[in-house]
Image 1 (cartoon, rainbow, N blue to C red):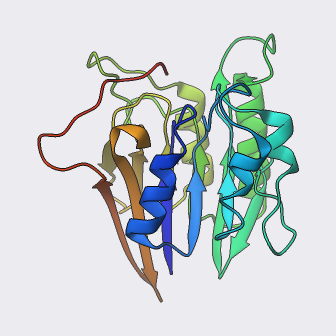
Image 2 (cartoon, one colour):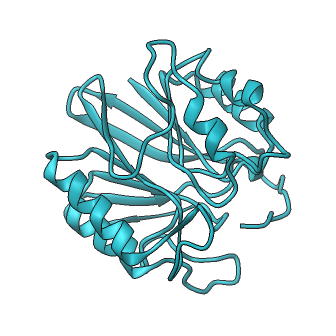
Length: 226
């Protein structure tokens, strides 16, 4: 089985179609930021589950009501609720969306307590293979374009509580990864319109996880807003 992970699309959905055509995944995962409501429509997003199963969390640039309505061909929701665990062909996938804040002033703000509660619900449901978040665990694959740290402690604590094999995040538009001593990985998918995706090939107990580029060597694109 092949999973393809994308992130931080900000309305540029053509890059996802290109990635699907190139890598031919069985399942599409998204770490959020499909685009604001004026950038993507329901029809735009519905084109993806019409092709293959899709699971997505949310970031700070998503049409949340629309995202919550879209379903896969089997009737399952594309959108993973906070703390939800979904199983696809024995692979258990969980999600904690949003970006960290001290309040709920905006619908995509999540507090320390929100993240901790979602992590507890996930952990209570048993082992997790893949954790999707938009925000990043501090100190792990969280370098910003300026070279500073852009992650949060609450997502690091969630990573430790859930202990997934693979933690995929986004938001910072810098593709990067960290492999821990126990073999678990944290990968920031980066921004797919700038060329970055993550490909996960799973055969029995063998996992081949890698950051891939949609661009040719030397080809680049400017960073967008995070």
